[in-house]
Image (tube, rainbow, N blue to C red):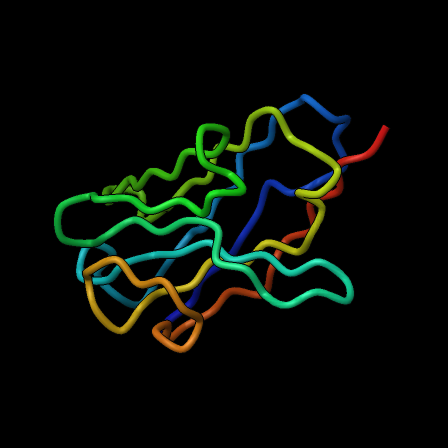
Length: 124
């Protein structure tokens, strides 16, 4: 049974950091690209970052480039999203998802399995 479970969300002040974890099970992690998406209230879901299963190539949305880092630990079946210099506009529910293929995937419809999400709130 395929599962993706996010953790690490919470309430932080602007400028601080959080590390999200996406623990996976039921499939071989490096066979699939893993992406992070977020959705704020009243807004469309946004693709934040992705890491390929094949060679570790990464993608970042312009809104997070230089502040967020995605990484993968195949031994732990876990993908991480390190979020630094957080801003109030980063507030959202963050989801991880497994794509249909190992190459970088940019859009939600390219993803097959989704986690339940973790709330990130950036506020003073």
